[in-house]
Structure formats: C-alpha cells, structure tokens
Length: 115
Image 1 (cartoon, rainbow, N blue to C red):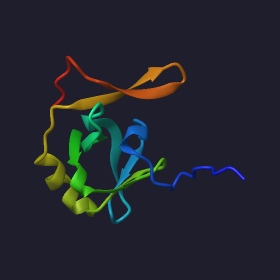
Image 2: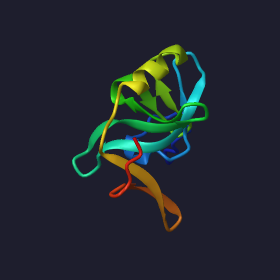
Image 3: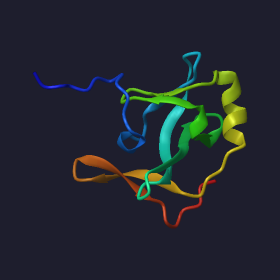
C-alpha cells in the first residue's frame, strides 16, 4: 500500500504554497502565506510573509511557527500576540511562489522591496 500524504501531515517550508491560511494557537485565521523568508539554496528558514486584510503585508519569524501542513501554517502564539510578533520582524531574503508549468515554485524577489 502506498503512503498518501494528508492535509494535516507536516511538510517542509519549501513545499508550502502561497495562499495557505495561517492559524494562531487559539484557532483563528490571521492571514494567508505570501512569501517564504530565508535562503532556499542553503536551506535556511527564517519565517513567513503573509497578507492580512487590515494590516496589509506582514512577516512572522520562524520561532512562532509551530507546524506547517498542506492545509495551514500553525502558530505557537494566540491571535492577540500576532501583531506584536510580526511587527518587530524584518528580513531581506524573500521568496515568492511563481508558476512554472502546473506546479508553483518559490523564486527570489530580486528587484522588489516589499517591507
């Protein structure tokens, strides 16, 4: 029998798709994945850039990310602490999901300053 990965199985940050919901530890959706922060060539994961309707684009450092699955990014902090955690973090190495064929791939934003 072949192993089939489910939506709640842990995945690598490199398999994370743009638009994946981000959930606080108290179960609230606080935004959706827009970027992966780090260095893909050296396999360094610094955090996640995300979109939030009222706050615009923000960043979360890796130490507040408890689990990444296909269905969601799960945080180790409640929604009340998300703004403080994301407001104090910045990172220059941003990768965005780009379409290549039928599968999205993360690619470096060379000429865009988003934050």
